[in-house]
Length: 226
Image (cartoon, rainbow, N blue to C red; front, top):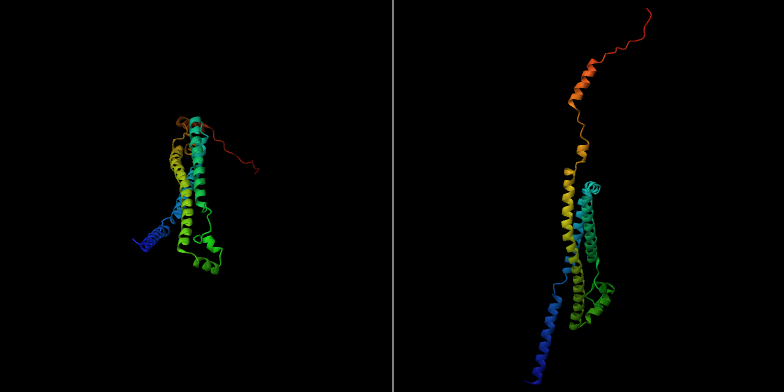
């Protein structure tokens, strides 16, 4: 094989490798993951809000359980509420940080929109027209790496938030069921306190007889002289 053939084969291999890298760099399915992570974070925060709203509905019954005479019941409710609150704060914080996390700092790249927005249209045109194919691939790789780092950090936080939500849901279910049935089993429920007092039948009959035997007093007006 001659030197010319070897040079042509090297150029073909380099071109083939560059085309493969270009295809992978431009078609890596990574741009949809940040929005997917943001949607999961919003769902977690929405679920936390729904759980809290249900607790607000049963607020009166929860307060009644906390003022119960049985210390075991009070301790159980306080433990459940404290555990739920801790998980809510941790999971909500992780979801909020994942939702608001910006893309990590990266070198200057015309694939990133803030870099493009800093330039005027003429500057952007002049910079992008002088780039070679290898330089363009390099800048796309920088953008992909920064975006992949952002996705990895977001989903790491969301895994913690989802673990907290799973434990929260179990505690929320237990507390909600206890609060829902608290008014039915409590002996001091408002329905029983507002019921009219029972009157003894014998006492009612005796009272009626006494009112019949009592003399009737007829009021007379002042005497008038005829």
